[in-house]
Length: 94
Image 1 (cartoon, rainbow, N blue to C red):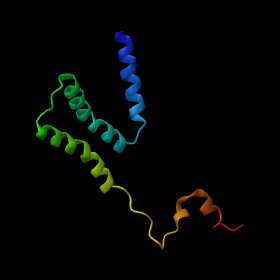
Image 2: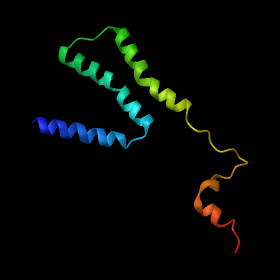
Image 3: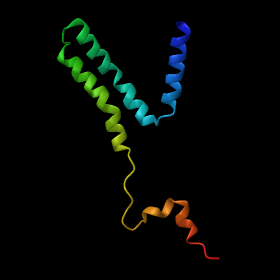
Image 4: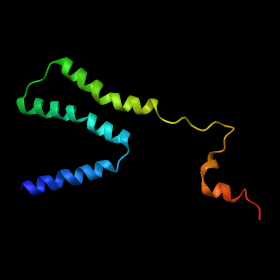
């Protein structure tokens, strides 16, 4: 049993490491929300509203941080295909 748990954790960590850092942070930030939800269901009692507010801020934080760091779209003067290898193939004359 212990070996299976260790294998599960190892494979989960490998899978998460293949994701982009921003996605990892968003997934990890939702852990407290799941914990409070499960606790509320098991105990059949709601937590203090400040707990829910704090968790909401924790969950939204990485999403807002990633949205503010997202690259801006190309300007109209810059062609969209300028970074593709095929775009450069047509510029070289033989």
